[in-house]
Length: 113
Image (cartoon, rainbow, N blue to C red; front, side, top):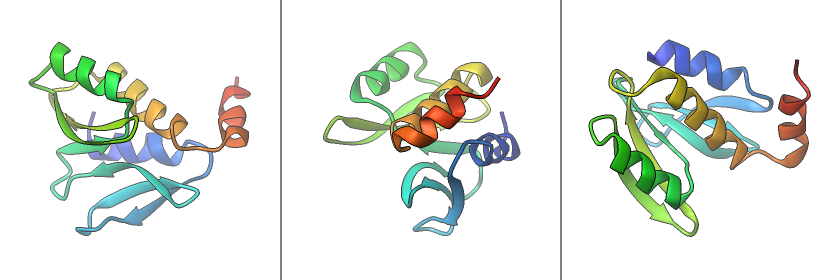
């Protein structure tokens, strides 16, 4: 998966807007809450995950996933776009959105054919 594919996936989810992150990198937010950030060189993403998911992904594929930081029940995960399995990463990115989006937006996605 490359940065363009990440952007297309993110902007295809209900309510997502692209913003400029703290270091000028692309940041994806829903209702002004960030859930995915592309790196400045667009080779990796940092995404929101549950702590258990963070630990599992790092243990399963340490070449593709590294832990970022944790706060509360969330553990942010850094994913190398070239090394990560595309289907798995697509699922993780969508789950990051689900962890952030309000219920009515999640329902909109779930209603899609």
